[in-house]
Image (cartoon, rainbow, N blue to C red; front, side):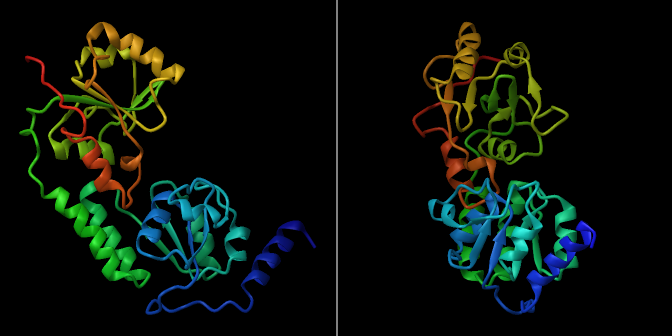
Length: 282
């Protein structure tokens, strides 16, 4: 028998004996194909129901003992089916559509998390909570974020300090328009100097960044001051006075994912968290 047919036969055999729940039933076996989805599911109290995650799902700590089914962009269909999931949770931000199509062909229910903007996340959390039978916990998470979204900005629109959020120091890659990070900066009242870029995560030259005169720079997770790449970036920023305390702030990865740590990420870049950005004369 040709190898492709053997592979299909094997996949079909994995499904024998598996019963798929109706949409009215809360799934007892869930596979998460994105780090943010894993974080949300655990925050909803579904630790026991999550049976599989991807190789890049690293939070919370308790999730690291779950079975890995491959990468976010290239999960193993065989590994997913072997876990006999009653629901596979996916996202449009990183999971390929063909994986969703393949799962549906095998009769595996899926839930696709579609929100990508900060204002859309509470609704997405509630939809996921309804799908997995955790409406109350989902509403609690959603309300926490909605409360921050309703908070008046620290600075008036267009009047806040010019900010740059560094995703990678060398080459210099920053957070541009359409990202959760840009939304968070805007929410607080910062002026993202990369907001007019043509892509979500544009590559900047240090000279271009300096030309735009940022007044505060956020260094994303992993770019500590002792990192050689970060050191070289700081040295090139020094002549502009940006190496002074409070002008460059190291932060975590909470704003990188559409998950339950978003409120903490917003607070982390807010003035008063150990720094107070000052506006230069304009």
